[in-house]
Length: 371
Ligand code: UD1
Ligand code: F6R
Image (cartoon, rainbow, N blue to C red; front, side):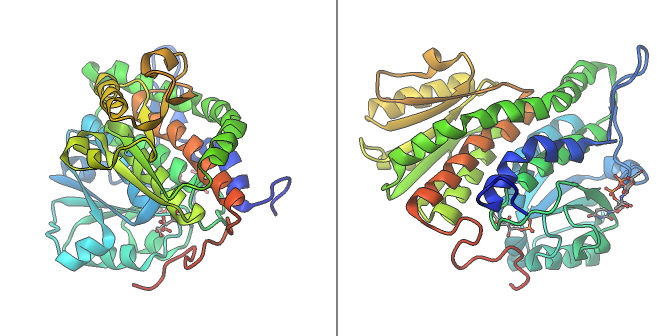
């Protein structure tokens, strides 16, 4: 049932304040005056000791689920102190990459039925790794075959393009980082800031959804373009990949997410006064580097659309050429949850305006059960 919405993708984008709330329900503990705020993931509590002892955490997924894991990679590394490596499921299988008994392999999948991810899981089980699932589907193959895991509880996702599952996956992996990371005195303030950020997230997601009309206007401007680049780095490299994936899969427009640190190593050659470029430059430790990326793109007359933190429009604008999207600020590691929303809205409106099928893009299936 689409309710008041025209398409499932639209409904699922607008549902995100509620879906991230149900993802966190019962799992965040506020703590009294003397008790610290904490996270409780029922499905992992008996395995946390083993995970903490592992030599490496390997995230495995495809498409949007891979991007969600990439968004969470650095907070998991920071809070756990364990190196995290990333694997696209098919590539791990193609290479028969090394997986060891001392590894914790985390399989991220909305459907829980993706063939490549499932085969990678079987491969990791054979190699003796502890296998953890992060899925939206209770009773799915990945939920059943993993040793333990977390259901993201985002509710059924019907649109082929994954939206609310993506944001809930990031929330679960941020909670996973808090659960694995020890509660030491030195990181207490950081942990509390992230937990406060999680409590605050539904309200901020609601706020960023108010950009709907603005994104529709932007879509009108981009309707006839051949291509769209999205530059991000740090926590928001994943946002660039995911925004570009949404645009290509539903709006059927070529789009590429680019790690801003790689700009000078090739992509800069594409920049001219015609090609539209989204630059994600919200506040975090990479902000000043992104400011200089904006300067350099501007110097090549790039057609810029800059996403920045509310109140930062003046610090990111260069001349009259750029458009600015201002988004609310949250804890840095949760910012990808906010930043992806305007890009989901942009992809949605672009698709409708270009007259394509939003909920069932050509050639794609919701659950990819063949290799
Ligand atoms: C569980 C209940 C939930 C209840 C809550 C109350 C289920 C599905 N969940 O939620 O209804 O409100 O307790 O305490 O009954 N698992 C995997 N692989 C996966 C995902 C999950 O093995 O990919 C396992 C977990 O290790 C766990 C079980 O499935 O043993 C349920 O996981 P999850 O729903 O995340 O657990 P809770 O949040 O504790
Ligand atoms: C993108 C999309 C796909 C899936 C991918 C993995 O919007 O839907 O890229 O993310 O096929 O699917 P799951 O998460 O079900 O394993």
